[in-house]
Length: 349
Ligand SMILES: CC(C)(COP(=O)(O)OP(=O)(O)OC[C@H]1O[C@@H](n2cnc3c(N)ncnc32)[C@H](O)[C@@H]1OP(=O)(O)O)[C@@H](O)C(=O)NCCC(=O)NCCS
Image (cartoon, rainbow, N blue to C red; front, side):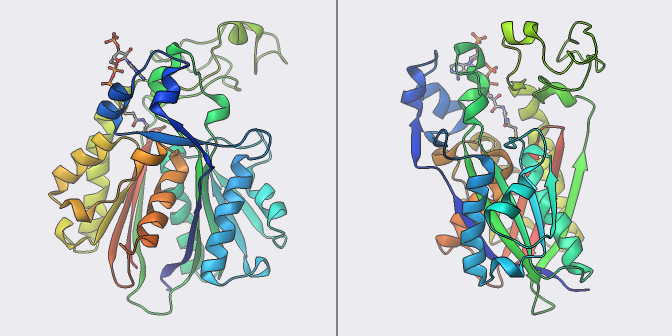
């Protein structure tokens, strides 16, 4: 079977820089608190009424296509990972098909939050390996800023997230040695609501969880969004940060070792580990557990915050642009997020 290479990679981050200091003007927080707990100094917010998840995803895709030397007519499948789609439906994949003038190819949206790009990469890898497609466009993009709670109540979530997009073009590898060596995907829905945005939604209050109480009973047609939810402003993302942190620092190393073990490698063999940019403290903890040097890990959360499905391709792209990834290098991607879902990919670049 063919291996899959990343033939081109691109990223796009909105111009609008929002510093920690800027956030102190709208909520009770501080630059010191945010930096100490998360490592984040600033993030980008999309330009309102101009940019959306689909448009910034398309921007990243254009660059990835240019770098891969492919034209719109060459793309034969689209995979779009996001938790912040422009529309509840249809997904962003078809919007990108329209924006980029792609052929009437398949377009798949992946709803796996922070691990969305690793999941999307794994799906694309299967289609290339079997020979079904030759040029797959994989995008991870998010616009969080349009729907965060910027009051003090929402500060534990709002200070973390930023907007951005990354994209890759997957192609069959020209050599048996190069390409994606393996991908590993996992989930555990036991505490799905621990990091979630249940409202508005179709859940009908059915999932009675200790993390989120069910909504009051409503007639058909009024169950998706209610006036009470709007009045209570219960329409924002919810996160128990400490619970997420505890699970992430166990599951990320586990899934990295799973990839290394399957391919007979040690952490010391890695040229570069590109973790999902959730929190600098999580990345540092994992680095310590793997026993790898600073030069073997790439972090850029300081500049962009957590861009969920976009974080891995943005970081991968930036590492590649800085010359930290070259042909033949061993690169590991790993992500953990809402669901919980997590995954890894090991790549001989
Ligand atoms: C979110 C996170 C930074 C919070 O750090 P923490 O040390 O767990 O902080 P806590 O939530 O326990 O809150 C500690 C205090 O800081 C306060 N606080 C929360 N957010 C704050 C903010 N932005 N600014 C100032 N204070 C804040 C809390 O209200 C709390 O105050 P209290 O002690 O008076 O009640 C941390 O839990 C985290 O990063 N978790 C992982 C999140 C993650 O990675 N999510 C994405 C998954 S992919």
